[in-house]
Length: 389
Image 1 (cartoon, rainbow, N blue to C red):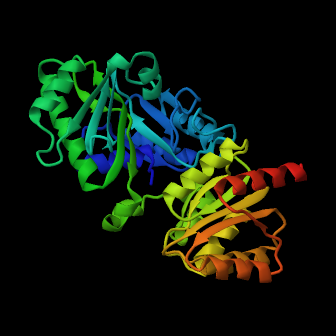
Image 2: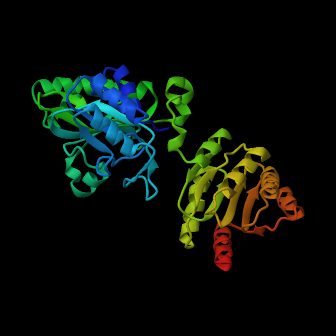
Image 3: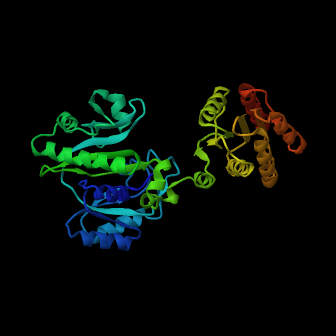
C-alpha cells in the first residue's frame, strides 16, 4: 500500500524524523489558510498524487503569499497531472500540500528497502539527490552507496557515519544524519514498511539535514497490525479492479495487454505471463486466485477479468493441488453465465479432480477452448485473438 507525501511525513514525524512543517489542503481556500498558518514569507505548494516527477510536470511551485497558494492550488485541484510515472492519462489531483520553503544547499538521495538477496533491510544512498535513482544507476552506478543492515544487530553507528562521509557530510551534519537515519530505520521496522524513499534529502544553507520529500510503501500482509496506517489508504489512487480484487483476497495487478489471465499460484502466474509474451501477445493482468479458492472466489476473479474492456480473450491456467479443478470449473461456469461471456475462453487445467472439472465445462454449454499444456494454451489464446481481429 502506498501513501501520499504529506501522510508519510506525518508518520515519520512520530519517530522524530526532521521534516518541514506543512498542511494538506483539499480546496484553494484551504491552501490559502495553510499558507497563513505557517506564518512564513514563502511556502511550497505540492500536488499530492502517488507518482514521482511532480516537480518536472508542473505540480510543485514556490509561492510568496496566500493568494498565490490559492491560485496555484486552483490550477491543480480536480485536474489530472501527467508525470513520467502516471502514463498519458495522468492522476487527478485531489489534495495539495502547503509546506514551509527550505533554503537548499545540497540535494542527496536516501532510501530504505527490503533487499531479498541479502535477506535484510538495506540503505541506499547517493550524492545525486533530486534525480530518479534508476537514472543514476544507469549512468553513474559508482555514485550509489548500498549498506545492508544486520537484522539481529540492527543499524550500527559506524554504518551511519560511513554513509554520511560517503555523502560528503561533515562535522555536526554527521551526527544529524545518524539521528535521522536511526529514526527512519525505526519507522521502517515498526510500520512494516517495504519502501521508504527520501528524494531529496537536503542540506540547508544553515547546515541542517532534513527530509524534503518522503515516499512510503507498506507490506499489505502487515497492515492488520497497523489500523492507523491502513486508514491512510486512498482508493482514488488505486486501480478499481485491484480494490475489488482485494475484497476477495485475490492478488491482482493491472497490466497493459489484452489477454486476461487467471492462474493459481504466483510462480505459475509469472510463467503464464511469460509464455503469453513468448507467443507474441501481452497479458492484461497478473491474477492469482490462490491455492485454496472456492467457486465464489473464482467467479469473482472471472468477473474482474471480464470487466476490463481491453480483454479480448481469457486464459485460465490451473494446476489443481489444494485448488480443486472441479471447483475452478464451477466458478468459471457461474461467472461466464452471469456476465454472458463474449470473448474466447481457453482453459488448461491439470491435477486434482481434473476429469470432473473438464466434465463440468463440457456440460455447461459454454464455448471453451481446451488446451493440453501451457504452450498449447498460449498458442490457442493468441490464435483466438488473431482470428477475431
